[in-house]
Amino acid sequence: MTTAAAQERAGCPKRMVFGPCGGVRDDARCELADHPCPFVAAPAPAWPDPLPVPAPRPGGLLDRAAAGPVVLADLTVTPFDPASVRAVVGALAGAVDAVLVGEHQNRPDLPPVLLAQEVLGAGGLPWTTLACRDRNRLVLEQELVGLARVGVDGVLCVTGDGRGPGVRPGVTQVFDLDGVRLTALAAAAGLAAAVPESPEAVPVADRPGRVALKQRAGAAVCVLNHVSTPARVAGFVAAARAAGATLPFVAGVAVYTDERSARVLQAFPGLHLDDAAVTRVLAAPDPVEAGVAAAVAEARALLAVPGVVGVDLSGLASDRGVLAGARVKAEVARRIQEGER
Image (cartoon, rainbow, N blue to C red; front, side, top):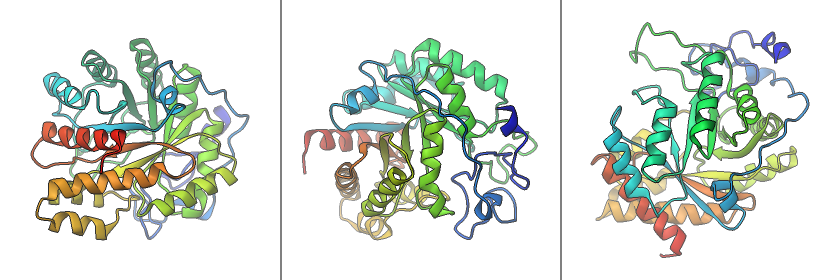
């Protein structure tokens, strides 16, 4: 997209063409700079001709979603520890349909292809996040080829969070592409591309149209960041449909059972939790049971929204370690799948 490359928005530290990112602050200020997001006053350009979307892999998440609701879970593991990957995937196995392999700005990760291989070897079905922050276009293309070769189910294409103050100071942040242009590369590589969207992030009115734009760039599914109520998700999906988006949605479900796991989610820009629900869980005699029940209730409400085919169990889930968190998510997933109360 050479024409698009010449249209990087002045004032965007992430060099985005198809912005804004999901990190715009509630006061419309940029995530990384002390000025308003340049995409708030002037929307991104339209995507040119729509790209074909690869067919779902047989038996994969999107294939299963055609037959009924699916459950995705964030993979939270000890950095650089293959044994931790195997243990966490083992705890989730049989309960979730796939795992969302994250990419973090504040802690290290194994390289995406290696991490995907570890998940596959442990019996998991990975959707691997690729972020543009630390990789130029050439490296992103290499990663896509590698991920396709090892057999991941799909790729979540994101521009990426900027690093916070003090996180690897002095290390260059690349942002050679944005998430939308990365989506086009993933689709061209034959990979199912997932894209994120933050329904309650500024500029709220532009977010439904961004889903339609991302679908034109080759997106197969949209993963929604946390929204304060299922009714807001329903309104957003309907607005995205009105804007021309026909792809399925996976809605984020906040999983927390203690102070730390709740506050980490609440701290993310562009994400909104039901604060009253958080208060009830943390004040409950058994916060673990209350947190599981709250996540199951939220998941069921979201799955009742037309267009939502699955949920993503997101967050640490527990401050007692990654394996404890995985077991909490597995319990949530089992209750969702089995229809327990």
